[in-house]
Length: 232
Image (cartoon, rainbow, N blue to C red; front, side, top):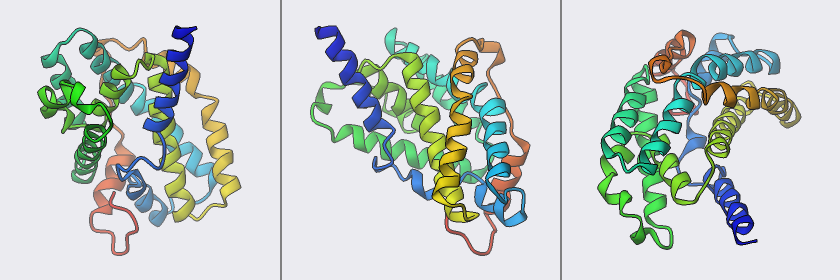
């Protein structure tokens, strides 16, 4: 019964970690969607779903998710160097200035949130692993998941869902889309998550890495976009 209660609490902690109300500024970033809408690459729910599916299957599954897994594993084995190296690799894989700044800003914000939670003084890694935690949002996500006993597959599902929901919410404002259309995109892409997670869990170290040309172009051009609602 106690184990069941602990598992239930871990899932509730995951809900908190991926909640839109978590003050890490996710609402402020579109990750290139704002420029893609400006250029007409994304114009409706169909083109939005195509854009997000491409990033999910060609980028997250080969980069973010396997790195997140390895950071959680490094925490399990107290391998500080591996944790730092994977966090650094993820940051260096962000292909534009705006994407790197977003990663750094969200990392700092999440570390601040975690540091102010009750019992934070009992998390020695918040200080001793701080350098890596300040590099990527994923590092803090992995630390919280490890601390709260969130299972690896649940962690990956939560991470992807948070990314997907934030992207759809940005698109709803920018295209604009109706709320129902946004929910339809979420529903459509959620069906692909189980297979995506399973694939990410099988990626070897040598296979880790991804590049999204369209995302990089959109993000780069967004830096000089005349009228902007979002920071990326």
